[in-house]
Length: 185
Image (spheres, rainbow, N blue to C red):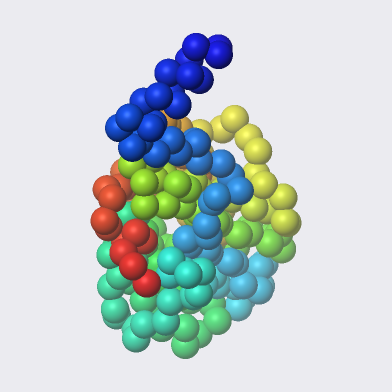
């Protein structure tokens, strides 16, 4: 072990390498969130919020499209409480036009959170998490029914890529250094 550490130190000094530890959950940054509003009522809807690299919610006029490493998100006006609104992934929006997208499933509160880890590195990844009544949904089932539609479990053997829960309509992410959210801002 001592020899390996000595070799790493020598390589680091000789070639000016920077050793970066693997990304941890503590380094994760909230990227996107869906919250079901007025669950179990006729006014049930949900709102999607996309966050900029500083952690502030993005605000764009209805119809605006924001490109991200998770794909494009479309801004949908929040003019009726029972209509999903805010930022919605473009593929999920197309899926909703065919399949609905606001399923009343009782009064449980549902939240979907998407975080980005190892931001702006070659190991940048996306992790999706479903919460029901404030608790992470832990199940071995591949698919989970939610008021926002079905979510499936994805796994990655690497730090980069997608892991956790993602809406079934979302394709694989296009993650490459230099794309949003790595852009300065």
